[in-house]
Length: 274
Image (cartoon, rainbow, N blue to C red; front, side, top):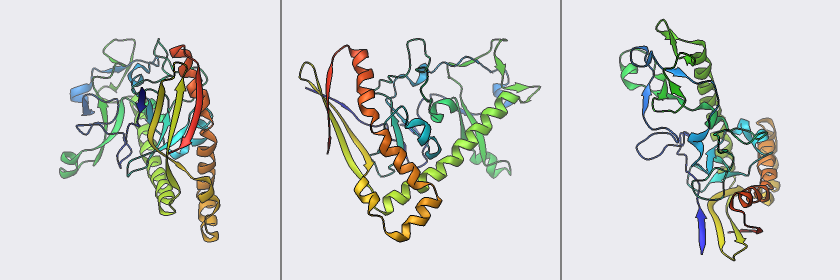
């Protein structure tokens, strides 16, 4: 018997879009407007329960160093090949969201998770009317939104609050980092550095769990890069990103041990090339 986990697949824009054009986690996405959302407030306590069912989460290049200490960093098996972190070995199970909704203490929380429930959107109606083309969007069904007075308001006197301004700047910074991440991925694809991999794990009851549908950087191909590529790769920080990714693959064992504690079944690890 085999349990198979495959990556959530962020599309070319890196937003983790699901069916219907909405980013991962989002249910009812709307452009933020004081007239429509003036009474909404944001709870200040962190609750990551919304990420409980996602075993892979999109990652930007700027996060590689921090994420590499805790998770395997992989590349999607689809044509975008965008990076993700593996946070669970079973489909729709995030091992780092605790029962109370907190993230495992001491482990890096991906920016994609911290950005929610906000996201930058292209507002074509506003653009056609001469207004801003890019607007801040919100999942109006997000669990951290409330009308309770104790929470932080999104608008004050009809204008964005300091909290909303900070979250908007974070969403903007995230979008800018996506462009850098795409350039790194494109450089890897141009030099054919990404190869498909799979990890098979044998459980104590002799069942097998397979994690497939992802890519990694081939270390031998990386070492064989032409001399003329060395300077741009070093200058752009791509070597550092590649090394962080390769080092992060050592976290597979830690991840399987964390899953073992959840499932209470010992495992033997047997990663192999697909």
